Image (cartoon, rainbow, N blue to C red; front, side, top):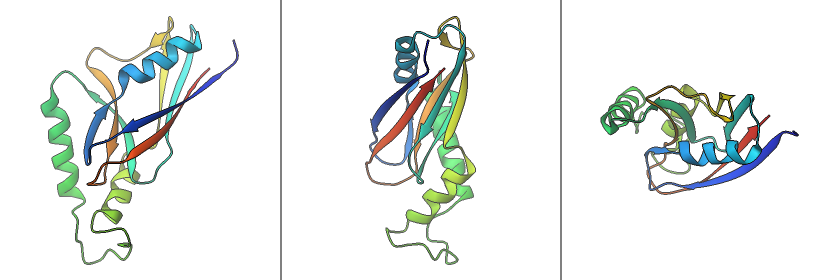
Amino acid sequence: MAPSVSPLEIRTSGRGLVEITSEVAASVSQADVVTGLCTVFVQHTSASLVIQENADPSAAADLARWLERLVPEEDPLYTHVAEGPDDMPSHIRAALTATSLAIPVVEGRLGLGTWQGIFLWEHRTRPHRRRLLIHVA
């Protein structure tokens, strides 16, 4: 079977993690690949991707609070502030996480662990439409 590339658009409501596991799993299912690799790529510089616990939402909330402490807004050393005080911190947060993920495809399904989910991490404070590409081969 030929590799499959599927576009995916996710609407965010502002800063935070949005679980996208089911959307990615649907793309894998449509690709009809039994054994392979699924690559998820976000086409933005102020959002990122992570694989994290999806059973307890407090894990995502704790991660978000930790990253906000690590990369605060309004740092006087930032010079890239054209789009507001969340602009440069969003780029740094994306650089510290990931813009792409590789997940094994095993028996036609994502090879995620029991408590793992795939999340789009919106780093901007206002809502956005984020474009992702899902490649399955």
